[in-house]
Amino acid sequence: MGERRYAVACLPGDGIGPEVIAEARGAADAAAARFGFGLDWTDYDLGADRYLRTGEVLPETVLKELGEVDAILLGAVGRPDVAPGVLERGLLLRLRFELDLYVNLRPVKLYPGVTSVLAGRGPRDVDLEVVRENTEGPYVGAGGVAHQGGPAEVATETSLNTRFGVERCVRFAAARARQRAGRLTLVHKTNVLVHSGDLWWRVGRQVAEEVGVELDYCHVDAACLHLVNDPGRFDVIVTDNLFGDILTDLGAAIAGGLGTAASANLNPAGRHNGSGDSTGASGPSLFEPVHGSAPDIAGSGRANPVAAVLSAGLMLDHLAEHEAAAALEQAVIAVLPGAARYSTKEIGEQVAVAVALQASA
Ligand code: IPM
Ligand code: MN
Image (cartoon, rainbow, N blue to C red; front, side):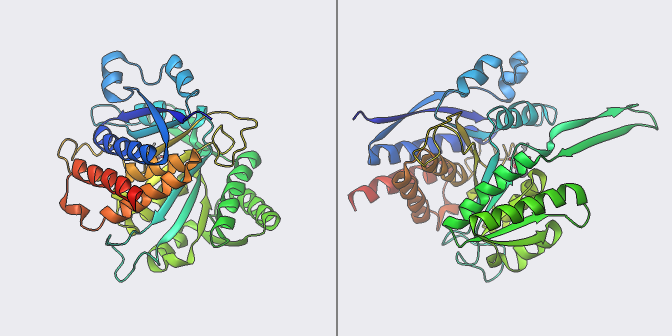
């Protein structure tokens, strides 16, 4: 049997993206070396610079190439000198949609030695996962404007929810809950959004019953309150695209900040789904920190690379390199206490060293 090798497309992007991705890559390479596989990285310069230089956001040829790799690791996109939405919609959301990355998996996990803004809460209190639907809702761009600039101007932004889209997302979340404490919480706003809310609720009930997990329901406003007051009540949250976007920033806040918040944009039916089942294989999944490009601290060495490192860990897990993924997380756990004193590069190096040290343990 030959060595296991994975083709990984690397999109460092803008702002702190390249800084944190360099460290994530070093840490992932260290884990790969330890566990006997190889990562073949190909860099793509997509982002603000290329857009401002050439007008290109995501050329078709590049999209096609990205569709053929094993995984994609992305830093962050967006910069103040590029109009809002150009890169976010044109690159990030386009990749999510085109590659059908219908699950956005975002662990909300407070690591030992990291201080939460929640007084008196520790790692045992904050350990949940948000499964955010990632290809529908108000993100699809359905809508438009009429009479722009005039007094009769109207703008619509329609939230699309298909049974197909809701069901595949809820199924993923239910399966995830089964592997954890078996508690699934649907978060929506069924008391106001009666059409989409009812669809989510009916699908949620049906899937939970089928899969055999306990289903709880929570309105999104109450979910915000509970996340702060009693985060331990949640195991796996499943929710729509926009609610999930908002909830996961709150989730990051209670778990010690955006510096450690990782995410996986998954096509669970894709070629590497961790189950060894590659039938119906489609494309790669994409891994990125929850944080943005943070132009205010770019170049200062103050960005925490841990969110990117943990995202690379989610990537290894998805590639079914479970031991390597676990080792990477353990290395992060070893380094995190006191990490605030160190630079982006120092933290990255410490994680890489910790991965290698575990090897001989
Ligand atoms: C995120 C980001 C994106 C989103 C933006 C940059 C389009 O906030 O990944 O959470 O809204 O999904
Ligand atoms: Mn967000």
